[in-house]
Image 1: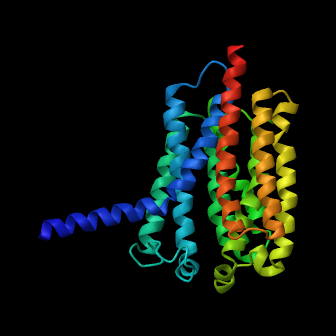
Image 2 (image 1 turned 90 degrees about the vertical axis):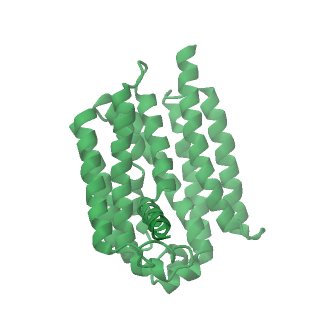
Length: 299
């Protein structure tokens, strides 16, 4: 019986530490990082860069997420969406979480330095600090534009993947960053509308709390239009072909439709449905970029 209890306890601790890394978010980041790598070269990505480069980026992202858990533990405790997180319920201590975050970040940086290049490591470190320190530690509580300014750190993965494969920065990966940067506000503000009362209770100045839902819905609509325009730029600069253009138009039109539905308030649960679609939108858009890239190479 004692052994069984110990095994259950160990399993719970393992799951708690995994949760600290926000694995679902990290997976979406890795998809964009992978696309950045594959788009960067016609010759193929070396397996060491592919495996250890993405692992390094994932470890650093997980470390930043763990810091986010530590800084936001009191906020998480009063929000229904997050009150069962490991630190909010006291299953993991802040000191243990910070030690875990440091270990992940150091391991990630070591892998990037060993298997990619110094520029990738420095850019990844800047992204980690931007999210964990600038956004989580300051912007989130300072301004309703928190997610717009802080979104730059979360938009970095395709750039990191590109630089890991090539060793340099160019216009193409910066355009991929711009797509995610434009995507971030309508993505998060839709969730913020759905969770408005919780953010207000936690005293977080998200846009629906400070300026109201109508103002936020207008800005979601405007940013979605900007996103649609930006998403067409890979075709404009001949980074992609017709397949991507069609996918970008279809996916963007659907996103715009959800933004209009949300603005009009014509359907129940429109905010959370817009948020959910936005995740699929980004995933499918980057997959379309990748498929289009290899289609062009085969022609």
